[in-house]
Length: 261
Length: 299
Image 1 (tube, chains in turn green, cyan):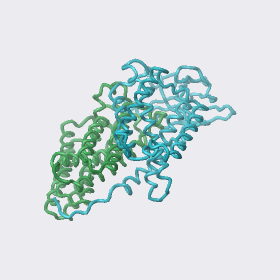
Image 2 (cartoon, chains in turn blue, orange):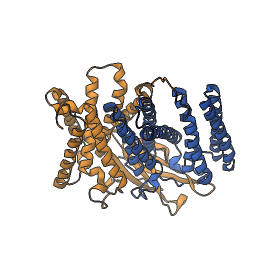
Image 3 (cartoon, one colour):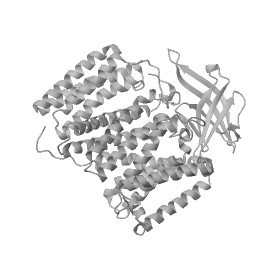
Image 4 (cartoon, chains in turn yellow, red):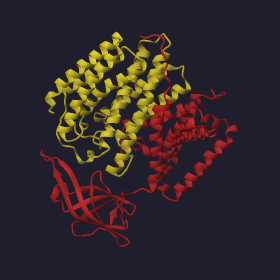
């Protein structure tokens, strides 16, 4: 599989996801699942093809993690849809996925076969995949929080908050698993499970933000404005942890988590 | 403020007090000297701390502060404060010395340490409070809270007992001496002989694999032959031996290989905490998430 084929696979997947989103608006359940999963299968086939031709999991560069993010967004979307039957969720996840596909078409990153020894570990794939899935869920939670804050502000939004809470619970669970897999891997690679490397520090910050949200929702269930604001801040921290770290003066030249984009 | 029941704002004031107290400590005794917490001091300190926690729990009806610490307002304020000071750490470059006074050595900055301890103390008390009337449905809560307390406590109290040595081994000369983190010569009690050091390259000449074939001699006369490579340490008599470095100028012709030797007696305790947290994370998504609200209308 070569990168040149990406545009075709991506186009086919986006068309399938758009059809799924369209049928969600029409309320035709079976077709929603059919087309969304078809799109996911097409997109995953490309990832798998890249995996085989690169002879390593495509998880090293930013472009490669964006690939997974584009895949997990519609997956998170269909999970939310299956639980709450939101008509719009699949349109949202498709558009967001398209944004990341778009970025990848213009900035694919380098896709060489080289995988430095530090990344050759059985922990590599689970660590990054779990993180990307959690980012997709928490991205959806952020979107819900923004929707509640800016569009539903004068109504009670119990149902929306319930969805947001659920997304954060599951997202935080995956975030925790991703972080702890990282710790177990770090022990095998560098001799210590936690070294307060800038990437680790920001992972801890992100984790604490979502922890704060959960505890705040438990103690002050009525104060949803503040809760939603916490989620917006949390997502900024998540972005810093994911890619912002490459531009942060505190991390430049200090982080061992830079693998050349 | 300060009328019962206390809420979150009292928590912020207490944390503010801790911060000021931390600054005072920093001025009075200087930065936290973690090396003082080596065995047996760490065992004694941990024991005292556990006694203190037990005492706080017992006195919860007498001292309102302790009662309050077991509840949500304390949790929210303490997480927010630990979060805030960790954000400062994330924004400022962290270095061994120099940089921003105090804040560039955040790990030995008293207010940072106190605010994290405060958060962990509150998590520990909340755990005890949930154990009082044990029910199976509390397992998820206990796994998450006790897990993080165990992992962080073991990592913190065990830190000074962890040995991280660097050993440079040349061909044909068994090495029994290593350097500690502060560059002191140490005898780890094992000797390493380098049999072969190799680097494999990709087509574009970026390194694919670093590996050292070694023979490890233990103090009791045993010989262990093995390969050490990145991500694959070798375990011999309590030490984990990691591939650490080589002569970069000479590449695969390097006349020596550098190993990192790590011994961390508290690791099993940290892993216990980590596995509790992993189980807790599964519970978080399976059992703890709020029930979906069934809808009346779609929008």
